[in-house]
Length: 55
Image (cartoon, rainbow, N blue to C red; front, side):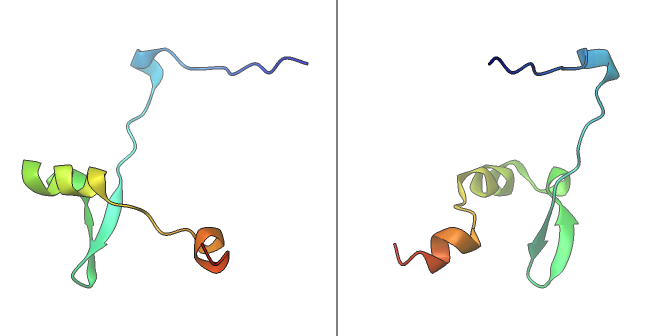
């Protein structure tokens, strides 16, 4: 069985704005300076399954 993934051409795609919580308020990552954007890319994100598995 093969799976097929349909993708849109680049000119039809809509950018997705990512927000994160910083110091108690939400802010779009696009407004971060370059250093803060780099720091955000290096973050390890929390997942409940990984936290409850005891690893």
